[in-house]
Length: 134
Length: 134
Length: 134
Length: 134
Image 1 (tube, rainbow over the protein chains, first blue to last red):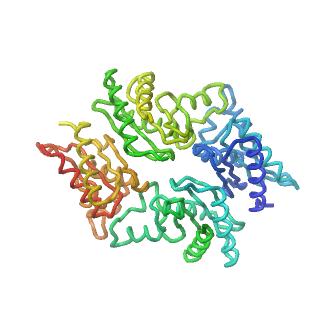
Image 2 (spheres, rainbow over the protein chains, first blue to last red):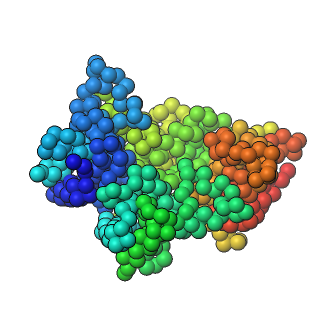
Image 3 (cartoon, rainbow over the protein chains, first blue to last red):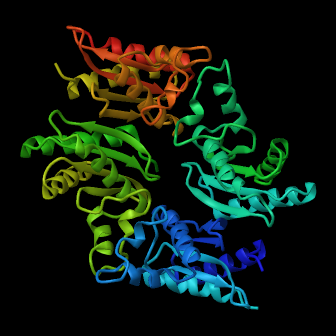
């Protein structure tokens, strides 16, 4: 199973719908399981500084198959892996990046959202991922 | 006048339609007039090595307001500006990047296409730009 | 509305006047709303290490439309966004970068000041921004 | 003798006056003898892609104490130093960068101009340097 353009468009549309509902223009990216960019969209009015963060969140989630904030647990003060966030050319370790899994449990890719408060970014990313139902 | 998501989606859809017609899966990016990423799509089967090229072509066309191959004229052997392609963190100076202009002649942004032969990339980029009619 | 050279010169002159008043030679940069350099000046005697910081502060403020120290709140210990300062090729998240807004509330760009103590840099940046009255 | 802000302002004003006379908005940078940025100005309407080039030309001229096109002679096909333009993090080796000398012949810094055709950039840079008379 591989991530398709249809998957990516579905995920992005669902994320942007939720972002519109909560009134926060966001950047949203979809990467494949190898962390290569599959699709990206910046909503009108979204912060320019969030482009890099949206892609970084998806990269982080794809490379480790985990939500970004779960990776943040490893590198927070007192965590097992201090400095982890500086590997791989820089990770983004706060919420808003979520891996995408196929029905068989294999990693399809990841989505990354940035533009609002962290809780808003996570809400949008969750809505985006939820659209990828089988 | 600013580049909107609707502009970007229109441009990408037209490019992907042409790419499908000629049977070449491509990567296509749309950047705004300041060379910030607005939207991106990688068609299923498109080369991974072309992701960076598609974005680089659009960056190059946006930064100079010119088609990428026109910039290539300046830095080809015997041209006026040897090494120009190494500025700005690296430019892409062969065809496939085309600036987008508003009806008043101001720069809106640029589209970049990569995935096929250079002539195919240019054909797809031209079809993409042509969709942005007013 | 776009940032003009006249805006930039006005902002820089006001900042340098304040810096002279408090006896601290500073570096000052003005970037447009897309974080591209518009103008820069290093006063005689200003620290070389502050050139990059002055530009980085303005970049940070422009990319997020917020004062640099407000962005620092997000990534301080216990903040919502640990590691945020490492995105976008590196942000500067202490005081001295302030966004510039047009009368209609749209982002015009940002100013960044570095060379003195942080409180001095902020004072100079505030004087610079205040000169951009309409 | 050291490059002062007054030198830099004089050089930039003269360059911008010439650019206005020939109707080409340009980017102009002044670096000191150690190739650190002293002042920069982007005229309204100047190409974004030329910001990096204007700074790169001044860097190149300052690092070698020679006009950029003279350095280009060393690395052109058949020249003595192929690849020279890739050293120092990238040089710009076409015209528009000119060193600034003090009356005693010591290097003060350099000016770099970009935004027009190469011949125009050189003309503006020459006018800028000529203003630094003693």
